[in-house]
Length: 216
Image 1: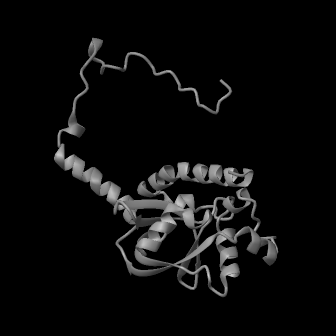
Image 2: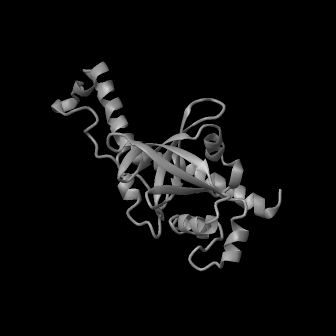
Image 3: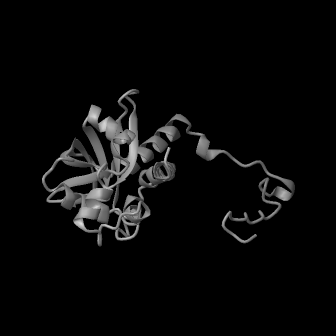
């Protein structure tokens, strides 16, 4: 494996490690907050797709741009990206966006005549991600951008039907309500009393945790 491919693989693993956190933020209803600074953080949506081997539902955060009502995103690591390969096998997807939740269909349009312009718009909307990969969509010439994205796959997503609300957060709340119904006493448990009638565990003030980022 060459140095460049090693760096690409490390970058891919780094981005992938953040996926669970990003999905959790959406499930908590904080998708709009993630998109509060698109020029720096990027415009981010969650793509729900079906595993080509397992048939299981997969959730992947991706950068995107919207042009004339259509959604465009890029498989920045090329055709090896798992989510891209899943779309090739089954183009039916869901997309979670800051302003709603939709059923949609995806297609590879990497041979589109306006590929370079569309690619540039997606990369601009990726915030810090493109420069991290050594691409500067605001200043790169067409020739440089073409060379740097030769292996990238351009995907167009067309929405077909609106779902109700920002489904990710609603599903999580629904599961929480389901747990409460199944365990009605879970939220009403009394804490055993300690000495002098105080709730057990309240005798000492908790010590502050030391942050992994603190100098301590």
